[in-house]
Length: 294
Image (cartoon, rainbow, N blue to C red):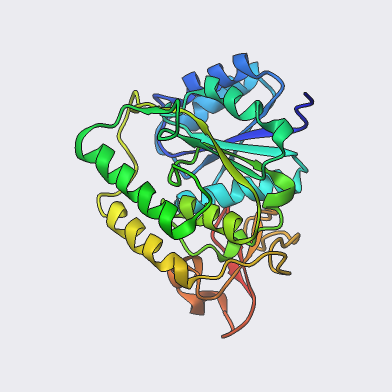
């Protein structure tokens, strides 16, 4: 089996108690894989620890967003990075050790199947979770509802532990996915399913985070359910000319610029007048600094 060029990406925000262990585990278990850290502006020693691990493994790279733009922007940046750097596969996962790096092997075993998107599931046969009580039933119920609304015959829609064929990912207009919160993850699956790409799943064990506090806001569950119920009324697009802008951002000079719809949350949450946004025009959005541009 030929692995191809593979990137493992994770988003961090104040994960100094977890990131060294994660990177050490990834580096020792999968020395041939590249690793990308997208940091949302940590105020602790997260980046200092990433730099220390980078000395040991030059396959580690990191990008610090200029302000806290949310989990969706971090993953959109990782998508753009994988596409721009011509990776064959992108694996995304949490940085808090709730996803076991050793289980990446479960995904790699599926490479020969040429599935466009493989999701790690705690609810499929062989999967497990440390969640219990109301947290288990809320999560389980949300995923059952997502299966009915989205389709795709999956048992898990909410985890970030997944592997993309980058060629397929590059054809999804992810900039039109209208979510800045954790509902972004099931909206990405919806975009793949509605665009006719193949999806599958592998079993994982979802662990309780070892250190630190969850970054999920208390109201996020309600907001995610509202976003889920809106999905039947959205129309994800494929092969849009807006998908990937290859210009550099005017503000931060990075090339993490994507096309977005003027009605997307990335635009609504900012003062459009500051950016001179023209009504009904095409807009680009920088996943690194948040700059909007016509």
